[in-house]
Image (tube, rainbow, N blue to C red):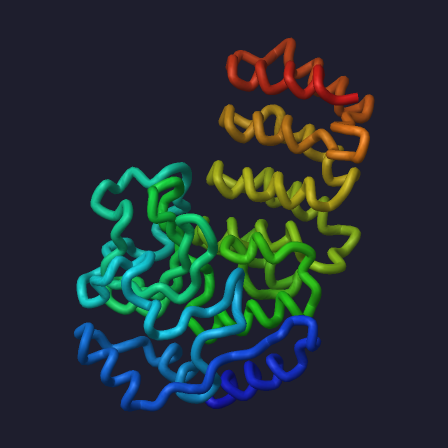
Amino acid sequence: MDARITRIQAKLAALPTTEKAVLGPALTETQISDFEDTHGVRLPEEFRQFLTRIGHGGYGPTYGLLPMERWVGRGGMGQPAESFPIVPDVDVPTGPDDRGDLVGSFPGTITVVYRGCSDFTLLVVTGPGRGRLVEVNAEGFFAPRFYADSDFLSWYERWLDFVLTGHQDLNWFADQMAGNEDQLVATLLNDDLPTRRRAAAYTFITHPAPSTTLPSTLIRALAAETHPAVRKSILRALAAQGEHGRDLLTMALGDPVAKVRSLAVVLMASNTPRGWRLPTQRREALSQRFSNETDESVRETIQRMLKHST
């Protein structure tokens, strides 16, 4: 763990001054023990090491890391000693949170980042996901989803890496993972967990300097992928590769899942200063698909894109 602490300290020092990468003073063991005794928990070791050796509160994703006095009472709703029931990586959560027992209350967690509105990043301190970070919405607009990172230090170091390497848009951070292109491709093609394959695909949306062969690799992954949510993430990654990637989206118009086909339709149009642009080749592909499409929602999406794009 010492090497990880040293790396994080070096990366913090390497950040440009424009990042304003300031952390609060490190906490003492007594301060942490007092918090643990008050709430009946033991903080995950990686988080304790960060707090005592690097800093407390300040620079981090979105609005930054919260100080200790804000860990309980927002997001986690003040029950860190109770178990957070969700097991990480069992499946990819999609859509609104349908667990009535969790909407607005996330036991077994502390809040480490407030992301705005009713979105929070929580650290699981009690339960099967102990040590992992999880993204939640207090109003149930989306189901809780675990970050791919194994612990707090991995999560924070990935944030620093994304900033230092110039990821194009850090708003996708919660859905992504660490790794260079070769590592991400290996995960996307070979990992047994759909949550990790999805995270790998999402990372390609903003990954700096992708190779010229990446679009064809994504198509290969799309053809082999069995999970609809992962296929949707691959489509987003393809669209992020520019016009060539959008041209390849026509291959998803025959997907067996209507929502995947609809997303492909939407992503085929490019948003330009003059409005939505749909090149002739893609327009013809959509017109042909419309003739064969049986799902009414997909037909409506195709009609809308054909009508509102040039």
